[in-house]
Length: 261
Image (cartoon, rainbow, N blue to C red; front, side, top):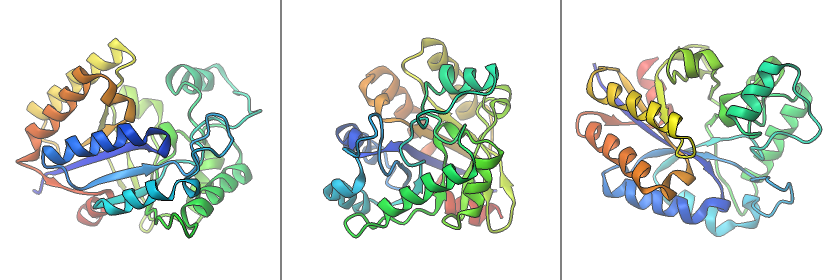
């Protein structure tokens, strides 16, 4: 059985350009030269377009110079204005876990489709020209309407969503759905959270188990730009990746799906 290693950079935006450049440099230093980039077309903390990719063509050129695969990571990443949570559970996931950044958790079908289309408009701009093969909604959160919009959009070969049960009850299981076949690949994605000591140490424990004890077909590491600001956390991530790199084949998501299906 071929064992795989998948490394993913989340929240790829010119807003985090300095952090992303340093992360890529250090990943290259440990032999990770192929990865997945989850691109946010218009990082929208203020919804003013300041970090829209079409305003930063030099950043888009740098991304394309890397040997990477792209997936669309929402449009603005942030929860759309004016939408209210329908339950205490939704609020818990949306505000306390996703800190207001689960963009596709609440909107209906038309609004979700409009967000995806606006994101593609930016990605296909002549000064950007980035092809995204997949869709990874921010925080992997959708509702039935927004998930249908992802499927119906026609932009993607695969997508990833994860319920709270998969994330917490099943310890970071994040399924990948092949939109061409409908088949689903289940594997863990280890994402660290340096802002929370509990979450950080929990993920470190899980990473220890996965890298030392669990003979999983696929191990996935997810890295967020703020991780680089905490040297202890980022060094642990790199050490964990380096530990499994020698015995596993580095894959992008589309390469992984081509193998398992």
